[in-house]
Every structure is written in C-alpha cells, then in structure tokens.
Length: 75
Image (tube, rainbow, N blue to C red; front, side, top):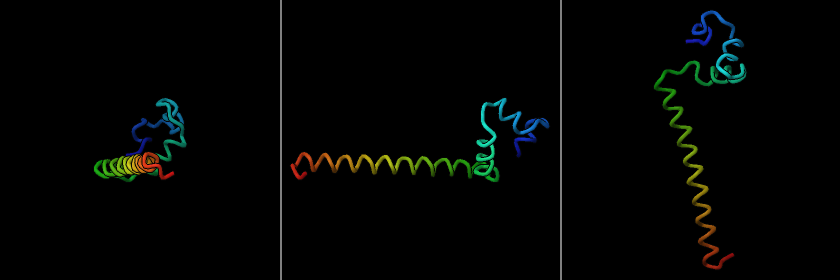
C-alpha cells in the first residue's frame, strides 16, 4: 500500500509535511519497507535489535578485558 493511496490524492510532499517527516525520509522508508509484508518488517526490526545488542556485548566484553588486565597489572 503506497502513501499516496492513503493520502487521499494529496502529494507526497504535502503529506510528509503534515506528519512531520522529510520527503527524503519517506523515500528511504519506502525503499526499505515498501515491498515487505508485516512479518518481514518484524524480522527486519529483530535483526537490527540483534545487531545493536551484539555491538553492546562486544563493547562490554572489551571493557571487561581491559579492566581485568589493569587489575592484574599487565598494562
């Protein structure tokens, strides 16, 4: 379903301004999510969350190793 069909014939720029996003954001969203079904969107969201959590774990693991070495005096 396209934004234009939901907008009642209004132009994309008008609708974007009315909901407070830029046209660039709309087209980026459309490119990323336009052809996805609801279950695919959910999967994409989970993949992003998983990547974020993996980065957090990596950062915390590195911090732990640094603190362990500092505590042992191996710096």
